[in-house]
Amino acid sequence: MKKKLIVAIVTVIGLFSLSGCFSDADLASSNLSEDADNFKVLRKVTFINTVTDEVLYTVEGNFSITADTADNQLEITAKTGKDEFQKHFLGLSETTVYIVEQLEWVETNQYNFKITVKPSALIPDVDIK
Image (tube, one colour):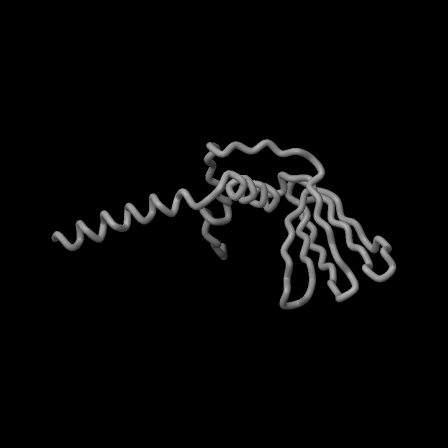
């Protein structure tokens, strides 16, 4: 019994000491990334040819970005309407670079707490016959 109490106390102390490792900037960055992945941040991606300095492609809007290093591409999922989405795959090469810009200020609060539950996670997949 004493060993379990000691382990519990050490665990709680360890968790509290780890909670101080995150800075305000880390928290704000995490919040902005989550909001962007939920289509709440206006962004712009610009692809540039590093040999010619030519702009090859731009994408602007509310979208989520995933860098797929296995396939050497950037995957952009855009929300284009209430329940409408598009997915674009942009190939990367040794002579291209991309820049992602946030186009407007987003207010963030270090004391803000929210839980986002997607309806598809709550409703089971049911086949009706």
